Image 1 (cartoon, rainbow, N blue to C red):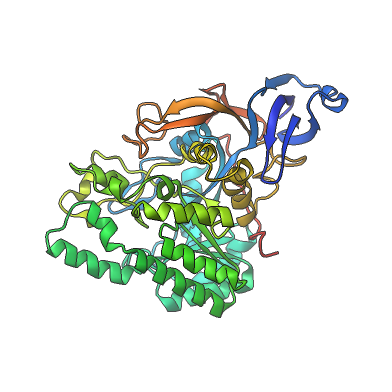
Image 2: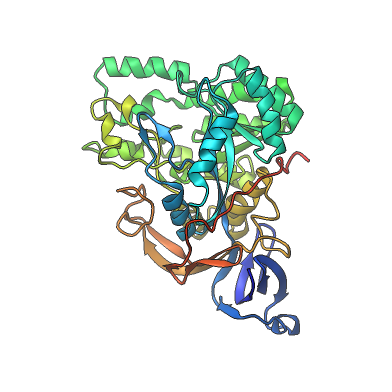
Length: 467
């Protein structure tokens, strides 16, 4: 691409700095920064000038946990790569890392090829893949080495969902041992799925079928137990560990203890655990099904501990686990049986705004906002400084963010392909105004100017916290 763009007069915020600076973009990359209203900045010339006076200039968000078109419970997540990445752009996210799925009895390569086919030519923003490993055997372990070499450097395993994605401790240990050798990072869904299935069966037998029982059987203690077990298995294997969607204070405590011992253990949480609770799961008339996800929403008192974990760096990343299912026709599959409700929430469009609200509310600082939403996920998954920051040489993934604009979140106005919002009616301060992906305007002053196919596949290096 040709042409230069200069962004003038904004407050540039990265994980490490806040500076009133002009940003020069050339050939899809950040070319230079200079303090605003200085001779150096005045010397920037460009075909296009964006006035960011009174606005923030921030790196595009990196959402390291999405599930577009995921098959689950006899249906599919309702966002395609096209609709989901467009919605991500509207929310100020310019890179997603989605999960390719290995089915039991099939190779990793087959699963990865399937996901490449879903995404290629359809994405509005850049994307990468993690690999879900459902079937650990000698062939799978060899394939893990090959995937790391070609830029798929993280592998997700499940201690939950027996009969679907579940791996036992032996399979987990083997995969961890392999990742210790090849530099990959194991991502763990840490819940004791075997025990949860027993509690679910017993609850249904008692006639406890409503959505709120989904949260009651998936006990916080079983998240903590699985988190502890995953940490110990990783320790035995000499491998790093990244625990996804941490929702329970007891699980945060396990991560904090491991990190205090100096172990390479990392934790992610999601906006739903920071802003929603079991009160939502208990909403009447089956409305609670909209909030069924795993790990489940917890009672409100867990929120303070999650925010504390984000401030103390016992949790390092906020991703969405975006996995939307429509209320009509999809969530409704579980009427009369909570265990049949497809697990997942829409959120890829809301993450940056919700976390800005957390800045407004005093939970985190502006720089920490960028750190947990952009820089750390990029580093964690081997994309920094190409993604996640504003620095010369980085991809020009840049968001002009209006910190004063007010908005009300609603399914009426969101761009995700789902018939409800998990945050319906929530008032937020702060809104995305313009989004550049590699220098190309995808959102221009609140209008979509991007297109399917602009987004390209991004191979990743290994976790940059281990180098």
